[in-house]
Image (cartoon, rainbow, N blue to C red; front, top):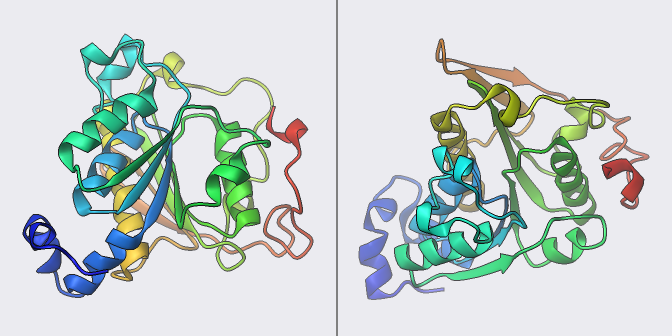
Length: 260
């Protein structure tokens, strides 16, 4: 897929990078990426994927923007209050880069719709703030054999990892199932907006590395940081052969009871 004169100019600084070149930029142009969540993590993910020239981007978010979101969800502004986040995100990205195809999925993912949405994309980025959603996206990506980049941010801390189904450790190898009972949320303990921005940028970097083949993604590794001391840690994770999702006798279908 040849690059136009305008694209060669727009992506010049990408193309100059060692290992990237026009071939790497063409891979980004051919790529189809689904971003689940257009909030604190999803905002920088979407901005940087669009700026980098990912040819087709899907945005999945059924939430409506409220005032407390604007402290960290930088893709949106005050004029977008009460608007669907996927729609608001699309409007901003089309202004940034009108050459791209932007799809919106203005709905919450569930066992009935997720596999149908995932099937049209090459790579999935999970940028949600709910444990149940994180497990649902992980499990569906393993079933659909879709590479997944996932992240989280809460309080002063963030995490990120990348997953190649049946080859590297998945989220369920690390955490078997969603925790029972109350789970702390940003509405209770807060979140520093820039932490979500930092780890959203890391997720975007992971996606670009995987799509272009440049660099070493976070497969079988969990990257974490508490920005109060700014110490990044990489924790090695082994794929669990007995994992309920990606193990030898792993998941064959999604069960709605598990994600409620």
